[in-house]
Image 1 (cartoon, helix red, strand yellow):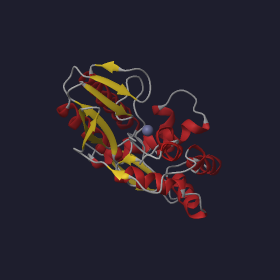
Image 2 (tube, rainbow, N blue to C red):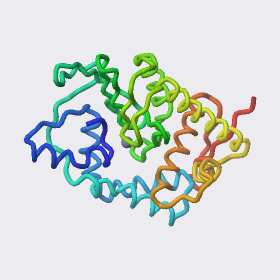
Image 3 (cartoon, rainbow, N blue to C red):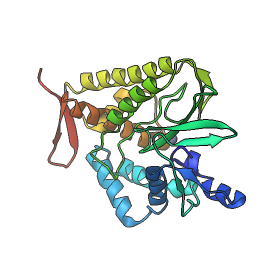
Image 4 (tube, rainbow, N blue to C red):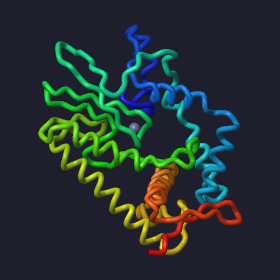
Length: 261
Ligand SMILES: [Zn+2]
């Protein structure tokens, strides 16, 4: 199992029971899945409401956000109570061929990619996708996190570890070749986003105020949660780079402003 998101681990409970097989995954992904599948109490709703408020959502949008984020269990009815740990560099023999685990961060905490040098194939999970850019979001339980820095570092690591001519099997859309080109496109996409954020932050912006700048189409409720997390990811990255500054206003909303050159 590559990572803890519902569309990847959702059937793990059923699969392991049906086939009497152990779940193989990384420690952080298993722990995240276990945490998220129990995370429905008042505490965590309060946490998500505060997070949304600090990001600048109004009360109605904040309560939609808090509710949506609590939906993990709908897609993940059960997470196996035990697992077998894999991690960076783990070698797994499958049908006489060795597959090596390469960890990616940023989209998920310890996302496992599987690379078989002999077959020239990478099972990329969501770390590298051909058509869309994987969601990189600040999470309510780590409100000051900088997942975009982790993601960009992981892209660099993967680019160095992988030959350019391998076949990539992503978890969404079709298999493709040209992994170096795709990694460069993904990095360029985030650089362009950062450029837009910098332009907007000539005046103070909250994450909520940035959403229409970064996402020009109308967002439904589901997309709004992703968009808010993505806006924050770019803002926190730029704070980490020393390009913008964060200030909390009297109402408790964080606004970000470009540093004077
Ligand atoms: Zn995912």
